[in-house]
Amino acid sequence: MVFPWCPCFVLRECMSLLSMKNISKAFFGVTVLDRVSLEVEQGEVHALLGENGAGKSTLMNILGGVYTKDQGTVEVNGVVLENASVTESEKAKVAFVHQELNLFNDLLVFENLFLGREILYKTGTLNKRAMISRARELFSDLGVNINPRAVVADLETSQKQLLEIAKALDTNARLIILDEPTTALNTSEIQHLFSIVDGLKKKGIGFVFISHKMPEIFTIAGRYTVLRNGQFIKTGNIAETNPKELTSLMVGREVSDRELYAQRPLGDIILELDNCSGPGFYNISLKVRRGEIIGLTGLAGSGASNVMQAMFGVLPFSEGNFFVRGGGIRNIDIHKAMKTARIGMVPTNRKENSILPDMQILENEYISEHTLSGRVQHIFKKKEIAKYNRYKEMLNIRDNSHQDLITSLSGGNQQKIILARLLNTNADIFLLDNPTQGIDVGAKGEIYKLILRLSEQGKTILVNTLEIPEIEKVADQCVVFYHGSVHAVLDRNSINETTVMLHATGAVPPAAGKE
Image (cartoon, rainbow, N blue to C red):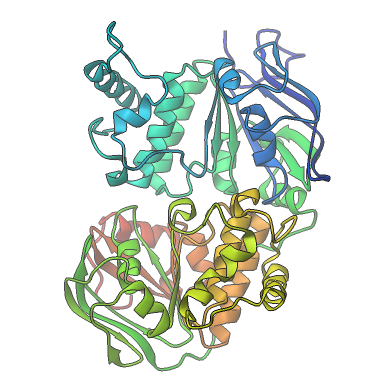
C-alpha cells in the first residue's frame, strides 16, 4: 500500500525512496555543500527550497551522477550509490527534468524521446514505427497532444517540458527531480502538470520539487527541506508552516511582501506601435511613455513575447509602423535596435538565447557592450572587472570568480549576469521577457526594486511575464494578449489576477483602451 506521505515511525508500509546523508562537496577549495541531508518517501512530493546558490542543483547533480560527492552517503530504494555516474543513476530509476531543458531542437520529438535508448529491429536498424507508437502511448497517458514527428524547435515551451517528463516516465523512473518545471507554463498548464504529478504519486513515484513559487509549493508538496549557503537548515511538513516562515528560512531574514509600486512622473511618448502585425501577433497598437513600466501578459503563445522580439529585431514586422522617440524605424534588426534605437532585451530561455556557455562570467557580461563599440580594438580587463564588480554588488551575484565559466553559476545567477549585460549597454528602453525565471524569492525583490529604480531614472521598461503578482508589484499598466492581439489594457487600479485571467482566456469581451 502506498501513502502520499507519512512518517516512517508511524506507518511501516511507508518506505524511504531516497536517503542522502551528510553530503559535502567543494569546488576548487570552496565548500558548496556542507553535510547536507535529504529524505524522500515513496509517493510524496518533497519541496527542495533555497536561494540561488544555496546548493540545491549541486545536491541534485550528485544524485543524478553529474558530480561526485566528497563525503556522505546516497541511498536510492535501499541501494547505496557510491559516486554513481549518470548512467548508474538512471539505472537506479532516478530521472532529472532540468530547468534548462536538455532537448535537441533540430531533432524530431520521438528522436529526442528515445535518444540513447533507441528501439531497434533485430538487424540493428532503427524501428521508427515502434518508437512513434510508444511516444503516442506516453503522450496519451499524460493527456497531452504532441505529434511524435514534430520538430522539437516548433514545440511550445510547455510541450517541451512535458516531453522531458515523458522521457523520465519511459525509463520507469521511481524518483523524478523537477527543477523549476513551471517557469514557462501558464495557469492551466500548471494545473495539468500537477494533475499528472498527483496521478504518478498514487503509483508510488516520488518527486523532488525545486521551485521558488510559494503558491505552487503549498499546492503540490507534502514536505520540504530548506538549504542556505550550502547548509541544511530545516525539514518539515508543508501543512505546519507558511510562506512567510519558509521565505525567512531561505534567506535568513524576514522578507517584506508589501507592495513595491510607487507612482512616478512620466515623460513624453518614447515608443509606439501602430497597427503592427508579425509572426504570432496582429494589429498591435501601443503607446509607452518615458519612465513607464508596462506589464505584458497572456497565456503561453498569446503573442506578447513575439511582439517583444519584433521590437528587438528578432522577428519581422509584416505590417504597421514602429516609432522610437518619434522617429519611424523600418527593417529593424538586433544591431539597429541596440545601437540606433537604444533598446536592450533580456530574452526568455537563457540557455538557448542568452548565455555563452564556453565563455567566462566576465565575458558574458561585457560582450554586448563591446559588440556595439566594435571599432574599439582592445578590451581593458581592469576596467571591465571594475564594472562587473559594481553589477555584482548591485544584483547580489554569487560567484566564485569572474574567470569561471558562466555554467558554473546557478540558473538564477546566470539570469543576473544577463541583466548585468543589458545594464552595461547604453539602452534606455528595456524589454524584459520573463526576467525572473529561476530567480529565488529574495532576489526577485531585488529585481523589482531595480526595475522601479531604473524607471525613476527615466528608463522605459516592458516586462512580459506569466506571473500576475509581478505585474502588480511594478507596472503602471498591464497589456493582456489573447490569440495574438491585445485584449485589454488595464490601468494600475484594474490589475488583479481575476481580471487579467478573464481577459487572457477570452472569457470577457475585449476592452478598448484602459479599463
